[in-house]
Image (cartoon, rainbow, N blue to C red; front, side):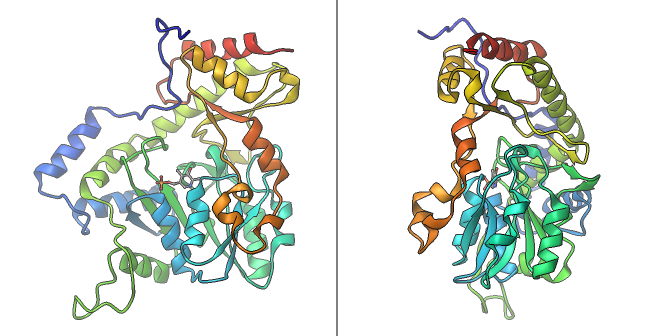
Length: 376
Ligand SMILES: *Cc1c(COP(=O)(O)O)cnc(C)c1O
């Protein structure tokens, strides 16, 4: 059944080269191994803060922990509500949940697929403390509107930039709008350290708290702890990989944007295929190239994915929205939250192979198969 003579095209492959290997080996040979504020860890943080256009960056073990820590330092506690993009990786909701808070899902906008800013104000209650927008698939959320609403209602903003390193809204870096912002360096993200994350901020008080809480909250004397903190340290070998990856990030983003161009050119005009939102104010880094398979396509998203897989092409669906997550639906009153647009995206959204070094001819093969399979 499978056409094994065809090259397998995975949805993503990390972009690693000799510079990355050398960077890790150099750090290892230096004896820098753990994550206890070694020169390599510090350098990675310094370079990353500069990259985001913010004052401080604190490395952590992954973005899930970054988000959890960010919620902790803005003071999220039991019963507090945080307005979260409904279409996101579950990590975004867990960050709120593990602090005792409630991640209130905000439905997606039908064409940007990001949080719909017009839905925010109706979800604000006395318990609302913060907004946690996601820059989904590398497209910035509408940060102007989000920060305006946050100001009006005195809410904090934490940006989930796990998919959006280097994205810009109106020429300003994502990650520099919120009180805090969190990044992921998981293997399929824009840059990788294997596992890893970063919290960035311009606020010195938050910065001190982050450094303190990510490393067990050592006190004075050292082994007297005033708070139940965490070990969320990033190792030096990972930071070494992060530095060499970050040195190449501009090139990575260029590759992602080229790839998106080739997809757009070859998918344009196929009935029932909706391409990513485009507007010049939104500088998209196209972490993954997502499309929506509408009814007019004539076949379902699942049928298409299956067909592509038989042709050795891997795809992945969009996220299952928060309002449908079984463990969240057990929270009191949670089932009242409806997110019809996110639910639709969960059924119709799919992302296509998006490795940095995907060849133009491979993208064309994917697009030709989609065209061929279209039932219209
Ligand atoms: C990948 C991802 C995360 C989690 O990142 P980890 O580093 O794997 O913990 C969080 N939010 C979004 C939107 C993501 O895509």
